[in-house]
Length: 350
Image (cartoon, rainbow, N blue to C red):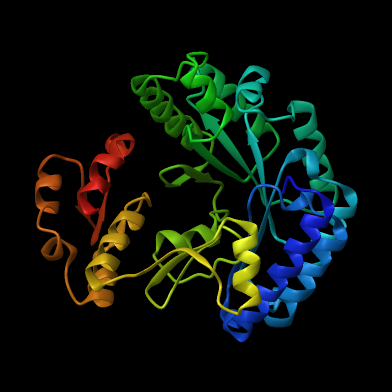
C-alpha cells in the first residue's frame, strides 16, 4: 500500500472490522491469499494486528495453503519471522522482469540484485514455496529477453511462475506514454511467438503448465487459484476485493471513504454486486474452467448443473470442428496449439 502510516493504520482497523462482519463464515476457509501486491509494505505491527484478527476465525494450521504477495524490496528479516510464526506457506513475488529497461518501463524500482537478496533471505527463514510473476510483451520484447528472465528464476529454484503478457490499463504511466506516442507496444504476432516458446521451454525445464498463464514444479500448483478456476465460493475482504458467495459475485468499493462508511454501517459498500442465474453460473464455469490446461470434467459439470455443457452450449460442437476445443477422457479443453487464441474460445460464453 502506497499510503502514509495513519492511512495504513486506519485501513487495517477497518479491515479487521470487516473480518468481524463475516465472523464464523470464515471458519471453513481452506486457502488464504493476502494480495494487493504490497502487503509487506505494512509495518510488522499492522500485519500482526491483521493476523491476530484472522486467527480468531481461521485455524491457520488447518489451511491447505496460505499465500502472501510481496515486492522484492519489502522483504525484511522482521517480516519473515512474523510470517513464519503465522504459518504462511507460500510467497509470491512481483518480480516482472530482471531486465533494467523493462523494469523502467514498468515503473518498478527493484533489480536482479534486490530479488536475489530477497530469495536468499526467504530461504534462510525456511520458505521454499516461492513464486514469481513474469511479464512479457513489453515494448520491443523478444523471446530471448524473456528466456533470460526465466533462466534466472529457474536458477533461483523458484517453484511457481505466472507468466503474463502486458495489459495496458487506464491511468498508468505506460498508458500515458502510449497516448503520447512515446511507447510502442509489442505486436500480437510477437507475443504469440513468445508465449508458445515459453510453454515449450518451461515444460522442458520440469514445470507443469496447468493454467493459461501459470506453471509450477510438480505439487506446487496454486491451490488458492484453483478455487477461482473451479468456480467455487470465496470471500474477498478489503477495498476493491472481489468475492463470490451464494451465487453472488461482488466487488468491494475501491474508494477508501466509501469502504469505511460501508463497514461502519455493517453493510459493506459494493462497487458491483450481481446475483448469477443458473445459465450465468454455467457460462462462468466454462470461462474459468477452460483456463485450466486439463479443462473441464464433463461428469462433474453434469452433476453440478444437471446438464451436459455440449447441450447447454450447442456452439461447442462448431468449436470442436474448428479444432479450438477438444474432448478426451471425459474432459473438454483448449488444445495446446490453440492456447494463445483462448480469448476467441472464451468470448463465445459471454
